[in-house]
Amino acid sequence: MNISIQRPLGSLWRLYLRHKRIGILGIFIIVLAVFLVFVFRTSDTRSGYVFEKAQRTSLAEIVSESGLITTDGNLPIFSPTNGTVSEVYVENGEHVTKNQPLFLVVSSATDQEKKTAYANYMAAKSILDASNANLHTLQSSMFTSWKKYIDLSTNSTYENSDGTPNIQNRTAAEFISAQNDWLAAEDNFKNQQGVIARDQAAVDNAYNAYLMTKTATANSPIDGIVENISFSKGDSLHPQSALTPTVKPALIIKNSEESEGVVIVGQTNIAKIKIGQPVVIKPDAYKDKKFKGIVLRINSIGENVQGVTNYTVYVEIENDTSLKSGMTFDCDITTQNLENVLTIPSSAVVLNNGLKSVRVLEKNEMKYIPVIIGVKGETRTQILNGISEGQEIITALTNIRAKKPSFLGL
Image (tube, rainbow, N blue to C red; front, side):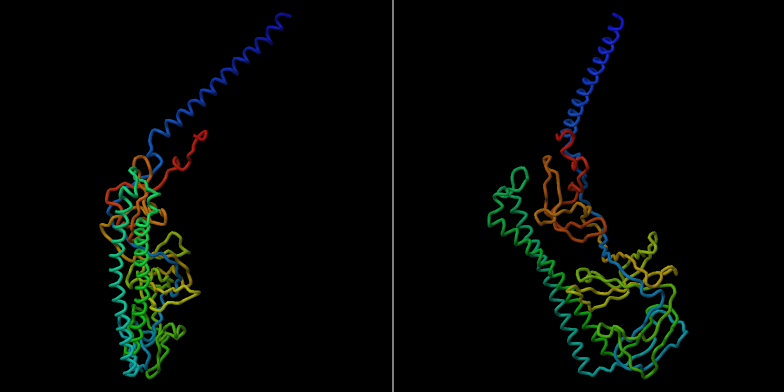
């Protein structure tokens, strides 16, 4: 009896000691975790951010659009003017070289029509020149307003000693007025860029209309074989335009080495596009292949669809026989290359109170600094004003920062 009683009592005692040790261990683990969280959160206030210094680099401005391959080496040639064919210099099947004359069209325009067209062109050009001059004035005004605003916002009245905005004082009329003057000046500058794009289109349109009043020779834009001549000497020909979009080509130049595509560009970017700019073509059919090209020509008259004006840009593409008419593609048009300009990663530019800004860490606190940006490249953005070379900025928040509060809500 004594043995049978002692064995259960001994088992219960061992079980009690085991649970006691587990409980102590659990308490120890919890205390250790709390301690590590506290140490981790107070050891390095910079650990929640990703930093990079503003630096001078080269920068390519890129306009990215989508397009469609319209010809796979067959280039339609239209008459350069309204008139009658006076001379035909080629025949079907003949090989021609770039810039070789194809045919001569004598303009049917009267002297009065020629003078009117030229006067319209000069008037449009004068308006464009005035718009460009006004752009410089508006840019100067923008920088002046920016300087006044930034000086005001960083003085002791409107900024606390720790660098944070003095929200209460910033409701003053003086501060609101300076801020609104700068924002208005910036909007005026941006709006003027749109005005210039419109005026440039008007100049191109007027110039093309003027050319259509002159006797002109059609030259081959590429090397190739002449096919499908659709006229004879003495026939009337008309150029392709927005008013005659379905006019039949005068002839076709067949060239298996080059393809052509069309890209639809909005009025915001059309002023940046120029003939001869390099283009990188990325066909949807070939995800891992890229093709080189250049801007071949630009329609000067836009198409307005539901209040949105778009322009057609034609690009010439190097062909290796794999590109086919009807294929869709994405493309990057390099509109300008800048050297030795102050840039930061594009991801570092954020909006704060409606202003483009960058973030910096001062006295362990994140602070926003308004900036004026220039050209935006594929991954980096030019900074015109607001920060200096070598200044350290926050480009991103790390997961450590994003996950606060952490373990146990601490």
